[in-house]
Amino acid sequence: MTRVAAVDCGTNSIRLLIADAHPETGELVQLDRRMTIVRLGQGVDRTGRLAPDALERTFAACREYAAAIEEHGAEHVRFVATSASRDAENRDEFVRGVLDILGVEPEVISGDQEAAFSFTGATKELTGRDDLARPYLVVDIGGGSTEFVVGAEGVSAARSVDIGCVRMTERHLVRDGAVTDPPTEAQIAAMRADIDAALDLAEKTVPLREARTLVGLAGSVTTVSAIAQDLPEYDSEAIHHSRVPLDRVREITTRLLASTHAERAAIPSMHPGRVDVIGAGALVLLAIMERTGATEVVVSEHDILDGIAWSIA
Image (spheres, helix red, strand yellow):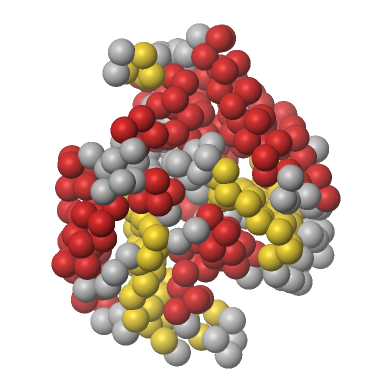
């Protein structure tokens, strides 16, 4: 048994998993899992730099995570940084800050590495289920990018494209520094065209339509599942391995894109940090389902964090 701590720092959120890994049994026993919305990628698509206040929010979360890691006595720590820090000119400032706080240097991984971790985390416990046909298509809809991974026993093809929920919101739904509420039909059409172009790019590498089971990861997908189930609050157990039909995803996406900030914020399972970006995230999911012909998405709460933890073990 090895006690490990995995940190995943993305464009919208930073997350921590502390777990006991049992490589001989394939079991990962979770001790602590938490998520903080820090919006590290704020403005990166426009400026090419990490904003000072975004860095400070991220460092504040790192200090909390450092205390948790010390409390649990994790033997090994791995910190993985994804889309926003890959794109930023001043990512060295980010690296130095994390190293000072956590004592480990963040690994600014490639999209392909990100995809492999996501696939391992999402599918390791699906092995042997007769009701879920392989190959799987794992889609990880992040803040800055979306990863597509196809595989059965392991990864056979992967691609990362820049259609995350934060990036799409900032690129298409922000006018005069504020998110349009609700967005116009023209804004939605422009965003959908951007998403479809990125799917064309992904499909050059990944055979999206050959997969038999679509597995969806990250906050946009889990929030859609929570809304589909009318959960009175966010409930990881109810969300994990839930199945959301295409028609329900389309209905929820239409509703979110037609709603105001106040209406989205009033949804009981909505995290405050996702209120402004959930419409774009849901549209990415809907476009993927329509492109691949998936009749449902299997939602997983286990994702890149679990894959990072297994890579340490």
